[in-house]
Length: 273
Image (cartoon, one colour):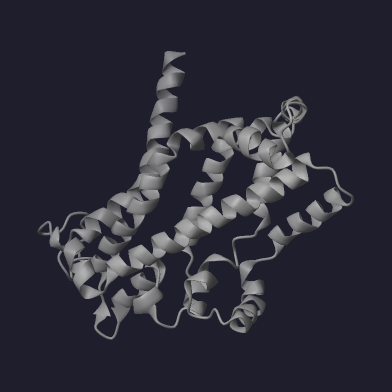
């Protein structure tokens, strides 16, 4: 028994190291001097540790502006997604109305449509709204997707209906039941959705590339990273340093929502019981 447990720990450690190696490589490359990224023979550590590479990122491009834009877009987008998904999920899970299940299936089917197919019609819609090269064009088009509604609907369906009925008998209206009873119970699921949504907005590249004309004013982090590749050569050490910096906001979010994230994943299997 002890031998099998030891083997399991060794295998888990090997898998963990496999997943951690790209991060270790990125940090090590970010600390190398220019020109040693693809040195021969290959070495994980350069001839010197250059911490100022991280400062050079902000002097090479206005990277702090891209981080601020990314936090604004991802934060606002996450709030909109949470509000829209929670309201629609509650309507699909707890309210009774004609055609509810059929409409939900159609809504769910939109998850099978890839983003690339929607880019052109979405761009034309943003152009008609006059939203090209604006923050709202980065936030709203992808805020009303079926994934969040599906995730929260499954959680709401796992909540016993007696709780809602008891609140209604106490005189609570439907909105108050939603705000005072269902939302507090859904914090773990909301935490999971918030993490996934923030990371999706933060890492989005194709849509901002199409919508944003003035990168220096409204560009996000993925658009800022491509500026390290240009006529002056590819600044790989700065790319890695900027990539490491760009990980920090999502890492802080994961740490802040760790309790809700673990609890949400742990209770996901109880949905729909």
